[in-house]
Length: 108
Length: 123
Image (tube, rainbow over all chains, first blue to last red; front, side, top):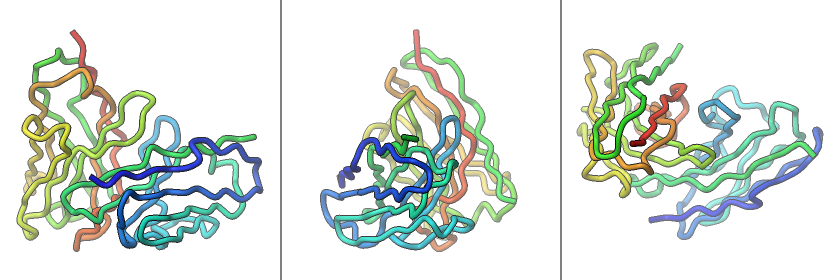
């Protein structure tokens, strides 16, 4: 099973600041990684897939990068609605999907 | 508009069974892989399993934690996906979400999700 590790566990930032979230895979997942945002009481929202492609309707301030084992989600300038938990998900193995433990982005 | 609505959650005793449904609309259900996920209270997301479209073989895959106990099925005529959960354990409790694959061609990423249904396992 491919294990995803996310860091930091919590990121405390102010609106307008840049957020950089990391996801590391225990073995290569090529570019087959996605990022989701989840707010309390809501279902996850797909932000990025194939490491760097924004999903429909996702603002340009969200960007993804990386390949192999190291990936980054960057939020260029935090808006109040961006404070949430972010999960990465891999699908290199089409028989098993795994998520990282999440990074919480809090208001500082 | 794509919509997914889960139902069937509730309180169940350990060892018993429960069937969840995911009613969908706004897209050609039979063309897409459908997946189930869960989230224990205060915890992260966990993939439960998925079922491919019939054109992709209609096969299912499951997480190790539920293999042999849970079964996913689909009724393309009704646009509904099901999750049959048997031999439920305390650790199966949580919010269960269904989700649709991003692409007909199968991406194994999920853009459309239901609102979730809560399963509580307790004696």
